[in-house]
Amino acid sequence: MSGKIGRNEPCPCGSGKKYKKCCAMEEKFDFSIPEECKTNTMLDEYLILMQGLGMFGQSLGQFDQERRGLNEAVRDFEKFFSPGEPVGVPDSIFMSWYLLDLRFGDSQKTVCERFIESEFVNRLQEPGPELLKNLSNSYLAFYLLKGVSDDYLTFEEVGTGKQWRTHRLNEPYERDSKIGDLWFIRLIGDSADAYIFTAPYIFPPDEKMLKAIRDGIEFQKVKWSEFPGRSLDQSLDFCDSSKASVIFWLSNILGKPLEMADHSMVDSANAVANTDGEKLHFSKIIFKILYPQNIKSKLSKVNSFEYDKEDKQWFWFKKTKNKGKISSEIIGGTVKIKGKWLIAETNSLGRALKIKAMIQKALGTDVEYEKIEAKDIASIPPLSKEEQETIDKETAVLNANPEVQALLHKQLHDYYHKSWIKQKIPALGDITPYAAAKTQEGRKLLKKLLDGIEENQNRSPDNAGKIDINELRQKLKLIP
Image (cartoon, rainbow, N blue to C red; front, side, top):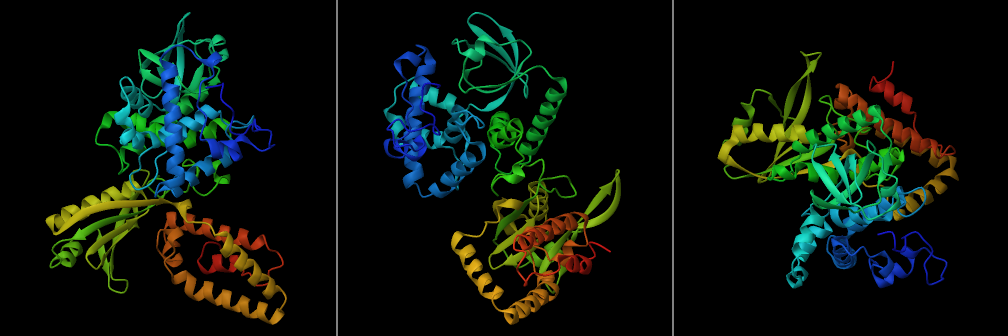
């Protein structure tokens, strides 16, 4: 794939713009294979199929109803990982992630999976459809180089121990290969007759690094086994979990802390976790109520559920452990009735599955499970450009009028100290700051939220309307 024009290279038309901002926008992605770059192997067929996938992906980005999610994910990736640039990831990794790994929209299917289901595939003759399946089932992963011969390289997949034999095509990185090196690559095809499909990241033998990667892969596999969107075909677990983990591994390889990236690309290793050690995903578990007569009485009989008459909802009180011993109870989630729907809310996918099972056991055929909706703590959308401009204009007016500034300060103080602390806040798992301050995980979230408010205020030092965050911390007993 090295013969293509890089998306961040100067456009060959001479405009002076980057290729991705110029002719690539008009001509469709160029996956054509220059004659001098052909390998005369099955790899050429894969690259020709990628040309079709690229065109199909571009059409989805322009006309599909769910194009917004696709385009936003691509922009985030380009912004953070700078594909094709010296400090960024190789184009081949970016394009294969975009077409083969990225899941988007309600169906959570990749560009390749959507292409396979489209009418275009009916026109393909074998081995085209079979090669498309191979592309779809491929993934980026870590491999140990175990053997080198004139025609083949032999790898061991770090996450599974699976053995792979790949064709050597006289690429520079193949000529310099050394047994024991660790590769991060995408292999494609049958494991006994595979091809290297992306420019690799290659690391010399390092036991400490290898152990850290093995630990990370085990964490990846365990968390995927708990994911509600997991395929019923468990043989796909490693493939699917690897596709979902590309962002995490690339951020570690490039040494970029993901908390500095856009809100949609938060590092799971650095995200705030709940007291079970699970990454925060604010989750709604939705049931359709079929027989409402006995719902309330049945829920109230669940030992760990407690009904709150004021809020008209049930709290799930979950026992926590400290060094193996039961130490305290926390609010694990809430359950409420909204019309014909029963909705449970919690702050991790693991807890979502547990509360789902508890409700199904208690209510049986009185309800029908619909779905789980989950969002990351960082998925709260940022201010739009228009909203930010409105705020900036209002701030300028306030800065010009001391009386208005004093009034604003009083209003903000009263709002945060009297109203805000009693409101349910999405960033706190839809509980109030008062309630959050009573639990260990809630205090972590509350601290993060208040730190963010303080940081935003400090960006405008001349703003006289800002409030004393330390005073608020004291009110919530976060500091003495």
